[in-house]
Amino acid sequence: MTFPRLGVIGGGQLARMMAAPAAELGVPFRVLAEAEDASAAQVAPHVVGDHTRVEDLRAFAATVDVVTFDHEHVPTEHLRVLEAEGVAVRPGPDALVHAQDKLVMRAAVERLGLPNPAWAPASDLEDVLAFGQAHGWPMVLKTARGGYDGKGVLVLADADAARTSAEEGTLGQWLAAGVAPLLAEAHVPFTRELSAQVARTPSGQVAAYPVVESVQTDGVCDVVTAPAPDLDPAVAEAASAAAVRLAEALDVTGMLAVELFETPGVGPGFQVNELAMRPHNSGHWSMDGAVTGQFEQHVRAVLDLPLGDVTALGRGTVMKNLLGGTRKDLHTGFAEALAAHPEAKVHTYGKGVRPGRKVGHVNVVALGERTLADAASAAESAAAVLRDGATPSDPTQEPRP
Ligand code: ADP
Image (cartoon, rainbow, N blue to C red; front, side, top):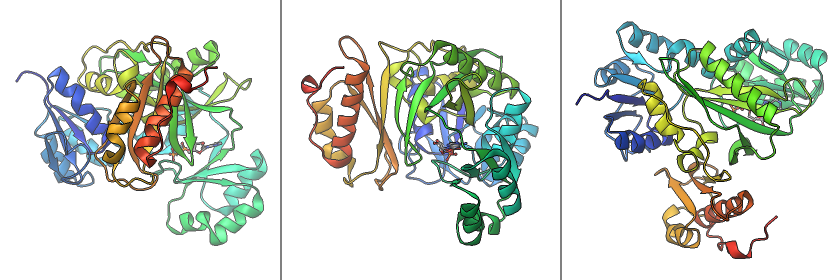
């Protein structure tokens, strides 16, 4: 074997979806999984270990040439130990900390002159009230670390709500748990959420995917449309440029997702929300909808191989997330969904169904006669059959705008 061996820390669905392109490229691939039945451990060579134990990380790293990640939870001090021992860690700890800590991220975005909402660290109720007074209500409070899918985000309507939350609510729990300093942010009156993804190699090659629209439901990514419909081309270009600038300035290797708020007429038309340094839910569309999907691109990028073409196919793609619903077993509706929607590309993660848990996604590419609206209704329908046993919608009966 002369190909470099790739190791992924974390056995979730992102590692699982890297396994197929790694196999196609012929890259030896291994996962450090949290459990024998983890999503990626079901499909890829793996060892079971704990990503918070440096001994487990060291033993795993010794079996591969390049280490990358399924998630952002590996302590940076452990990654520094690995780097000091000569392990290629991509992205490295100095980049990754910007995806782990939202206060560090905000400071970097500000330093680079990119558009942030007003923000400040907040260590107690006094700081929160002072921020609300200075920047207006409602305001947003976030834990700097450990938030995901809207957990760790608190919207405070006014000063009374802040006081009540500090006395008997989430703010009080956070302060008691010692997670301060928190991140206080102005509440952004955005029109929609966008995501700009780029890949960057250690040699410095970058490739920017089309900017996409991401619809969150209850704080969880629900539908992604790529490219973002009706996005002002100047805003799209500025958002891509901001993502490239962040990737270069922070020395990101692999995939970077920059989550954005669209703010027409304010600044460059967007503000940065947060960063993810790995393949991201807002890029799942590219598995079927771009010449090179984000998982293949991540593998290429972290191995310092030339990047693939990121052109979107057809009129674009709609991705619908499959969250756990009423059906306990996704296989019940599987054949029915595939039969009703041959145009749908169904991806499931081998995870047990729990209400609201991300267990798969459906991509439909708008090719040939199919419009983006057709793609959206087919993706919704296929997901509803799988999730809840809904009756498939007949695409020939769908009105076309
Ligand atoms: P997570 O780390 O859980 O993804 P985010 O920081 O992305 O947390 O916030 C989750 C959601 O909360 C966002 O998708 C957005 O809808 C809303 N939100 C976050 N920050 C703000 C803000 N400053 N103004 C308005 N809404 C916000």
